[in-house]
Amino acid sequence: MKSATIGVMNNYGFGIDVGGSGVKGAIVDLDNGTFVGERIKILTPKPSTPDAVADTCRQIVEQAEWTGPVGITIPAIVKQQQARSAANIDKSWIDTDVSELFHRHIGPTRDIAVLNDADAAGIAEVAYGNPIARKGSVIFLTFGTGIGSALLINGQLYPNSELGHLNIDGKEAERRASSAVKERKDLSYKEWAKRVDRVLKEYEKLFSPTTFVAGGGISRKHEKWIPRLTCETTVVPAELLNRAGIVGAAMAARDHICP
Image (cartoon, rainbow, N blue to C red):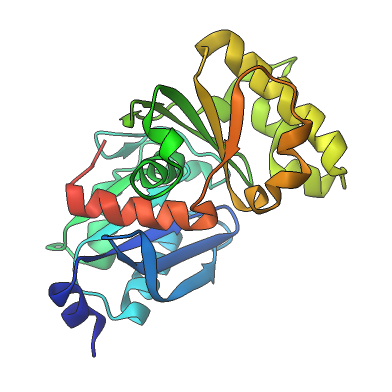
């Protein structure tokens, strides 16, 4: 059965998560936040220019045979459907009209929502993940190629926080403590946790959060590093892991979330 027909029959959506190394998409069951079928992944084009990435997104949509609304996350500040930054992606994204871009590549009449990748992951975690993300002032962080952030107040999103670019001791937080830094420098979990701890303590000073929720692929091994953290704020692992961006993108398309 074609995925378009399945989507009509069920509460399904489609999300695409554009990352520094891969562009990933999947049909999402919006009743429970799980994938329907296999996730599709294509390596992020080099250079990762807007048109090259948008064409990769088109390929994923076509491969999935999906004809409904599409949500897309990008590693950038998105305001009024304009990309205002470019983190871990080609700098030519800055000032790109992302609505025009993706409609041109995927379809001029299709419903398309574009938002920041960490914001998408944050709203997905609130909806389907750790219940603690819905209460109080929560800083949701994704540790990957960089450090993405979503500020959540009782489950409501304050968009485009970009805390990974906060300068800490003369260096951006994500250049100090992303999981990519851990891999590049071959750091042990003990060594890397010290770096994460320094970043979280700075966030504590500025925002006094109720909870940190740690996401990204490295949160799968949370038992190796979260217990080593000494910040005062409770740190808990996210539950959706790398699924969160795609799920949040699908939610954005359904709910017409277009910052």
